[in-house]
Image 1 (cartoon, rainbow over the protein chains, first blue to last red):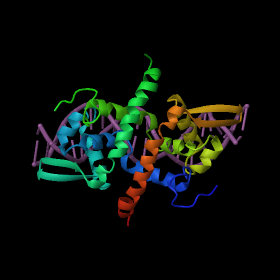
Image 2 (cartoon, each protein chain N blue to C red):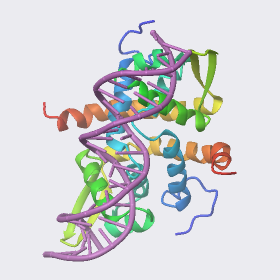
Image 3 (cartoon, helix red, strand yellow):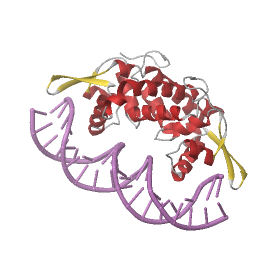
Image 4 (cartoon, protein in one colour):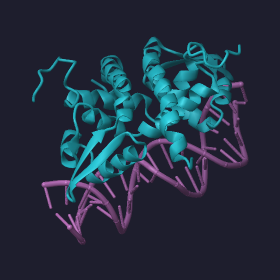
Length: 121
Length: 121
DNA sequence: CCGCATCCGCTATGATACTG
DNA sequence: CAGTATCATAGCGGATGCGG
């Protein structure tokens, strides 16, 4: 049952795969980071713009999550004035686009199939 | 800047997109669920097999997360004996495969680009 | 108005021991 | 083997208010 390393078709349960998933989750895990990246996908935005788009997020969480994204080199922060920063995706952050699109597609299908079913109605 | 609803190409920052992401995260959020689904992608497995493959997970967390996945109709549990259950992905669970593959690919690339750099190089 | 800090409850995760 | 019960804790996330 051993696959040779480098074969990317079969080793779905190899430790390498689980490691990659863990690494990915470390960067984009949690309730907010995917959403933040999603709203930054089309163009750079300022703090307040992001917070308005993701309307439930608090300033505190946005601040924290932006820092984590910066640490992981997914976004870049540009200070214009002291009180006017702009956040944009790095190329590395943009490379998450396919993943986010999958997430969106799947989430939409999932709502159709399951969520209405679960949440009553 | 308003896109018409139903257009699935542009509205990256529309609330519909954020809603879909939220729905998806609700199902597969957390440290373990993606990994569990990943190890179930190729074939059904029993509790102990999963716990061995995902070596850091505790029985407690595995039990909890399997229940959540079942609730979201992503996996199906089959009791053979009382002490011999089997878990397999539903079709809906299998539909996560593209997402997981993206996650794996991205995680691998991310490790190359960022993680060594972060973790004390 | 922008971003961040402090306080605090809550949830997710974990260690360990136990049951059928 | 396949879980459950109990206890502990770190971090998430909200409310609020402060310093630019």
